[in-house]
Image 1: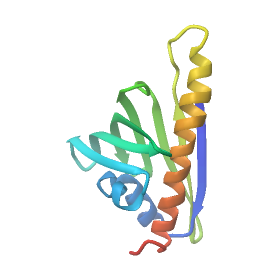
Image 2: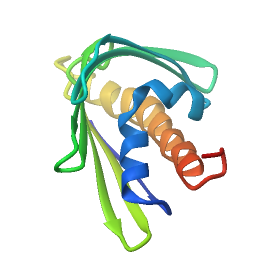
Image 3: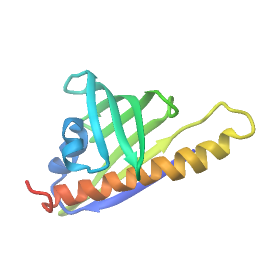
Image 4: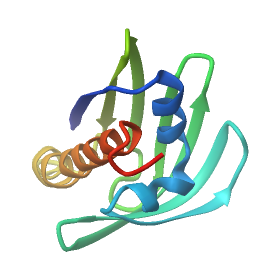
Length: 149
């Protein structure tokens, strides 16, 4: 399963990158995020337990986050839950006064026959793509100033 979401944010690269990297603020600025709890915390690597909603359906997972400020990449590796093993990469491509933000999710389930369908349609399309799309939409509103500074 691979899903890709992207959006253009009309804000400075530093503001966009640091907002994406700062998970502690996500529940404030992203209405579908319920909470983020740090299990380990440092400037460039964190282990977090996160919870969001897909519509009315609650989901949660544990993930390692690696923040590469030099390359402007934020990586996640899901450690627990039905998305265990999923790799997520956030990339940021500046262009004048805007930033193209892309989130790529990759997951391979080791379930014979139905694994591909479950990963692609249920996990990928129904949950991951939807939640990532809302994340980008609301992060864009925040960094562009619609939710305040």
